[in-house]
Length: 164
Image (cartoon, rainbow, N blue to C red; front, side):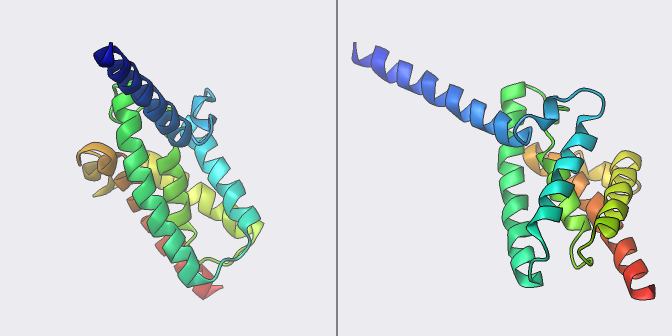
């Protein structure tokens, strides 16, 4: 009888762990929208970034670090739950990449749109070394390519913002 209760509790715990991993990894279901779930995830990130308003740079950096670590953990667990390392339903990595893109960028709808487009271009294109980073293990590999795509887009946006 004890084994049965402990076993049931363990199964329930695993189900809940997988449920929350999928919930967060899909950014509350955005990853289940057909036709480009990554774009939908980035659109969700754009909305969150826009409605957050301009954060002080240090606070934004702290948020970005926490988001990146959380994304790695959630992506790893969701990959195990989906039984695919980088399921198309996992879009929290796009959120992370978009937030990297918008680091130190002026807060406006136009800059956000430019960041959205640049991030999606680099995320889809995956120039060197972005494609290589996908081969990293577990959640690190899932998130790293989006972080690098965000870095590329961020560099371009920062150069443009200085010129303008």
